[in-house]
Each structure stands twice: as C-alpha cells, then as structure tokens.
Length: 597
Image (cartoon, rainbow, N blue to C red; front, side, top):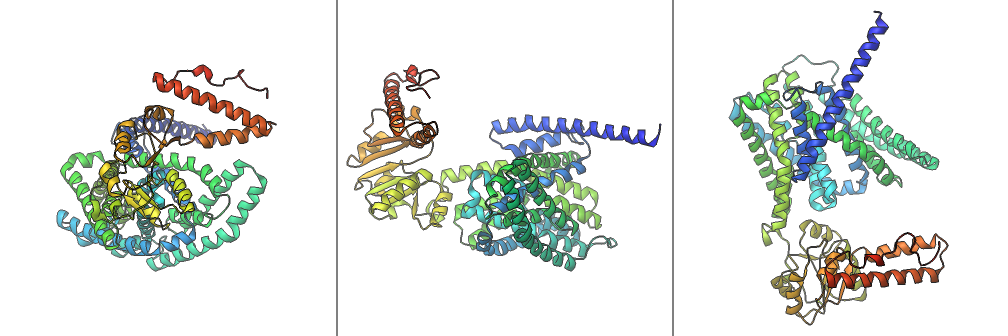
C-alpha cells in the first residue's frame, strides 16, 4: 500500500470519526438541553451534563476534547463580536468608570481573597496559590452575556455594569498571563513574548483594529451592501470576525477582545442588524459546543476522589466572589437588590480559568492533578449558575430588600390625574400621549431594571405592585380620574380588577389585555376600555397590505368595517358561551371573500 493510499485511508477515517463525534455530541446536547429547559434549568447546564456524559470520564463515546474546545472557543469570539455590534463607542466611553473602576477592583480584590483562601485551605505555595486564585477571579462571559442579551437586561444599568466587569476581565488576561510568566519556574519559551511586549502588542492591536474598522471594514460592507447578496454578507461577517481574531492570536492576545473591537467598529453601520441576524446562528451552535467541550473536560475522577473539597471549594468560590462584588457594587452606589444580583450573576468561575491553569502548569507552578482539580471546581461553579439565576429572578419578583434599595414607592409621588401601572413599551406610549396633553401622571412598575432604565431617560417611575389596593390608595388613586393598567401578559383578571373598580368608583379603568381569552374573562366589569395589545397594529398592517393589491380606500374601509363587525359579534358570542369556538363560522376563510382580489 503506497503512501497516497495510506493518507487517503487516514483522511477517510478522520472524517468518519469527526462525523461520528459530531452526531453523538449534538444528539446528547439536543436531548439534555430539551430536558433541562423543560425543567426551567436553562441550556448551559444541559450542555455541560451532555459533555460530561459522552466525554472521556463519562461513557467515553467522544475523544479529542482539547481539539473540540479550540473549535468551540470560536463561539465566544462570535459572542463578543455581536456584543460589540450593540455597543457604540460613545456608550463604551460612558462606561469607562465601571470598566476600569469596578472591573479592576473586582479582579484585584477577588483575586487576592481567593489566593488567601487557597493558600490557607490547601497548603500550596504562595506562587501556586496566586496562579490559581487570580484566574478564579474571572467569571464566565460565555454564560452571563447570552443570558443578559436574551433577557434584554444588557441595556439596563445593572446589565451594563455586569458587562463592564466582564469586559475588564477579558482585558486582564494579558496581565494575568504576565504574572504567571513572572512566577514561572520553567525555562522561558522563546515563542512567547515578554509581559511588556504583550502590553505593547495589546495597545497596538486595539489601535490597528480601530483604524481597520474605520478605513477598511466599513468601506468593505458598503461595497457588499451594493451587491445585495445575503450569502456575501455572511461571508463578509465571518471574514471580519476571523481576521480580527487571527490578528490577536498571532500576537498571543485575546481573540475575543479582537472580535469585540471589530464589532464595536460596526456598531453605527447601517448593516449592523443584518450582520447580527447572519452571525447569531453560528454563535449559538458554537457556544453550545463550547459548553459541551467544557463538560467533556470535567475530571469526574477528581470529583469522586475529593467530593467534599470540590463542592466546598466551588461553594466558597461563589460565596467569596458574590460577597466581594456586592461590597464593591454598594461602594459604586448600586441599590442593595441590584448589588446582590450582580454578585450572584458573576460569582462562577470562567472559561479563561482553564487557559490560565494550563499556563500555570506549563510554568511548573502547579502539577497536572491540581490543574485538573481546580478545573473541576470551575466547572461545578459554572453548573450552579442556572440555579443562581433562578434565585436572582425569584429575588427580583419577591422584592427582597424593599425601600432599602433606594427605589421609591408611589406614596412619595405628587397627586396626579392619571395613574399608569406598567411602564413597558405599551405603558410608555400611553404615558407619552397623556403627557403631551399636560395631564399629570404617576408611573408605577414592579420591575426594578425597568425603573433603572427609565431613570436614564429622566422618567420618575415608582416601584410596587400596582394591582394592590393599599399601594394604589397611597399613590392617590382615590383622587385620580383614570387608572390605566398596561401590564404585560395575562395576569390581570376579574378577581383583581373588581375590588379596584369598587374601591375607586370615580376613576375610569383602562386595561391592556393579552388576547381575546383574557378579554372574555373581563366581561361584566365596568371598564372604560379594554385593548388587545396587538389588535390595532395588526389591523393597520392589514390595511397597508390591502393597498398593495389594488384596493381602493373605500374598499379597504369596507373590508375593515366588516372584519371589526364580525370580530365584535364573535367576542359577544364567546363571552356568553365561554367557548372560543363560538361563531367560528363568522371568520373569513379562503372562498368567503367580500370582494374578488
């Protein structure tokens, strides 16, 4: 058998292995993510468990963990690129105090505290304790940022502070590698630049990427935009991410930081939203594979050998980081509840810990067993994050901390003619119309993050549950002419609204409803108005669409009138029967048109 035949056979075997491993990993991920999401535990824990199960220490179905991790690392790169797209440079400048103030203090204070804990608990040398404690100060960008983006909290003051800390942690990778290199007992690696040179490379790379963004990347996308080929947009987007990451990798710097800067340079581009839509699917799948690879790297043997130490140290890691961040957040004048949430959100170990543990092992500061043991501790802490986030949500809903958080209750509001309960996208529009007329309005919302965001726009929103009689009374509902409930979802029902209507008979009640089912449930109440949240916008869109089919204004008006009459007739019948299928024959169907198109 000739060399060419052997190479072909090896290539075919490698391809078969990659396909088999991919099928196993994606199948396990799909199964466990579905299962864990069903129980409200989030996708990340599902990916970690799937990886641990199929990995070398589990069933051993998939090998080459390190190689898989290097590929999946690109998911973090894409994530930071997308975050950069959402962050205009002016916004980044506004966050400079949080990035270089709160972020710097978090890494330094947490690193020192964890170093002291490890030194006391393990008997390691001070150098070894530093090499482990400082990396443990970093949190998981790959876990926290997707959560903040999905919930929309990344644009709130609390979310911006969490992002600022994570960004500084990414920037701190270079100094931490420098510290590990300075403590090294191993002969210097000629391929790795010294610390000062790395710092110079970092500044040069940032300046270079900023200039490239202005003079190369933006013009490139203008050319691509003229071609109007979506596939070319995908190629151009991936090229931008890969090129920025490759530059940073060549300089031994953070590839994620390079992608973030490239994204930020495109934040004010007219193609930003299309880029985001094209890149996001790649980010999702690669980030999922990253967590599967982290699970595969979990040393189950290390956990079984010292289970109490691993669990105890993971709990101590979470407690120390949460306590440090809470104290620093309070120092930066965050409300108590927000400070607690920030501390818990960033209390886990991070993915860059694995990189720094490997560097410490190469520097002969820690042995492979210690690197494996603390890698397991980081993974366990990451696995706890979904539970901590659920606790955060519960903590927010319960309103733990009350007035100590600095969120004013509506009892402090001035007397007003209207009270709006729920200041989201719906309530904001209603409030704007009333304020345009000069009507005095009291705004109430139960979501602290929404209140904080509203403050940045100069709006004074009061905290509380606006469906409670005592709270409405303290807000001046007895003197108000209108109570407007603009709450999202279908939580408002007749049982909640009837006592309010009885307690404040002088006030007209207006209610936002989620759908016709909720509207039917409010039948019989003395309401000034109940409005399905998307009904009017849907009718408006339908009118605009009819105009595209050669319909005259008179014809459009006649069709709209007929639809509204039938919809009203169906609602009345459904309210009487309690059955949504009542008068379903009055719905328009193919073949039942009023006019031929």
